[in-house]
Image (cartoon, rainbow, N blue to C red; front, side, top):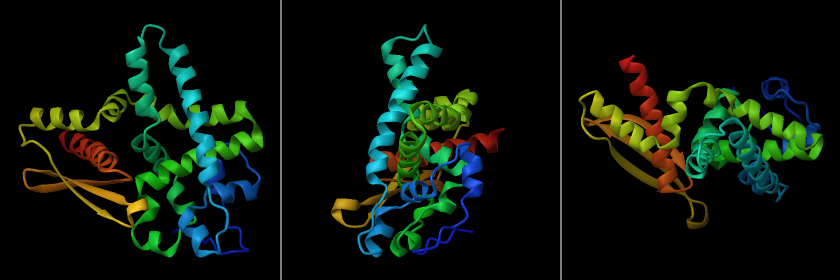
Length: 237
């Protein structure tokens, strides 16, 4: 069940704190969870976008250093590909779902009604905001440690990590191995021009296999492709 987010009331975040493995000043954690839609509906309160900006930089640095030190035999091009995969909205949204982050988001009514708690773009942005909040509250070492804990499950699953690096190509290769038709993508968008959300559906042999969302058509297609890869992998196991 989604956590309450009324003004003046601090919901129980203990499950989220346990999943993150780090404690935060409650006010800073609440800010990290506050989407701009909630802030707009509550008189222009502060939202998490500045924390997201900070967390994005910390995430990139932590992943870059980890890859450089952990994979001494990889060239610059391969390191860049792996970094792009690990910091992508697709990967971060998967991380967010694994820790139940969607239940804790503070969203406006419109986002609630359109499934905002499971939108990859919102989930990914919130992960970055939390990283930024940890940096401000606990310092760089704790923020880096959080990043490494969050991405460890991706690194521990080489097949899925490989698929996340290039979901559309990985899906194309999988359906070919299964003897099925090439995947097709249907994309729709919603929202104002400055804040559109795209939803992509993967169609294989006339059947809708998965959907994905993002702030661009490409991002939505990648999210949908990775989900389709996961579904078909499970079916063929």
